[in-house]
Image 1 (cartoon, one colour):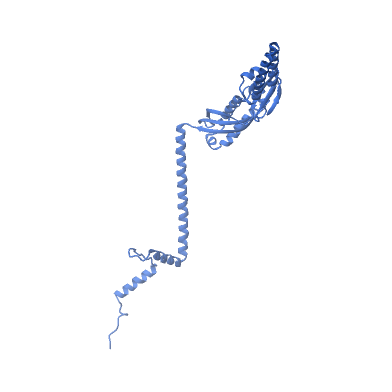
Image 2: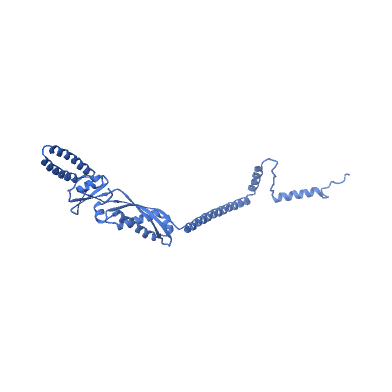
Length: 313
């Protein structure tokens, strides 16, 4: 039986009402006693027809009263009993008794229920139109209040969720809507709980499903994201070049302060070239060594008089 459905205590409800947990036992008992009574009536009618008719009427009345008095509610159901139109009690789960004819029962499902928030267009704080939908989860915490205070609590809480969603989204920018969904959902929950306070309803959660934007805005955001990625890549490369230049400057100062380090580096470079014939080796020698070699070459080509040997005696 749907939440908030009516189950009247009477013969019409037993014969035509839906077969649910709350009246299943009543229906079974009613038809079982009816079959037994029919058998007894047939047996009596063979001896005394008038007495059989009286017995049949009395048995039918007894069957109706007994089967209408016994009800059964499932573990997740609460039965709100109204006696002569006024609230009387909450029954269930399990077996319970009601007064035939004068009692009316409304069965409430106390499990968590889901209500879809249909797609609707909302204008954000920065005047961006978006289409948004979601799902609201709630349960009935007080069956009597949910039945007495609201005609159709599922419909009403759905309407409140829609209006609360529009109010909250209208105070948010597009960036907040895209990055702060959980905070927005909690804010909508608080709005719905505040508006439905006293109705016996408990909001257990809300989820924003889809946020749809105009195609042109999607393209603009895609270009913006691409530009941001290029910007980060350029900054990363520039920082790497800066760090490399700083390391080279430190190395140059170290070489300048230690001539031996320069010579050692030169030898390491030569050693790394390898012994293959295809390699051309270029040696970097100090300037004073090169000048000394040039002077020696000049002396060998043009010897002076002091260096010439004298005539033999």
